[in-house]
Image (cartoon, rainbow, N blue to C red; front, side, top):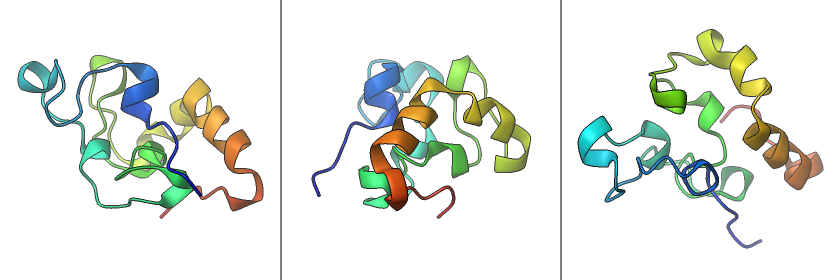
Length: 92
């Protein structure tokens, strides 16, 4: 299966390594955490909700338990869940 778009590509946050906002705001851990292949993504780009300290909305989001409700409401999360169907992985 081909890799699909990652959160930083869809959300255009610019916080991936070398991204336009990485120097200013730091690199998001979803873009560097080694989980390539989960839900068809690169690093944790399609399982960002399971990674502590992601930088969604300009704020550090905390642990999975702290951010779960917000993430489950995220359009990107819903898209990944739909695209992956029965292959969807909630946690790594």
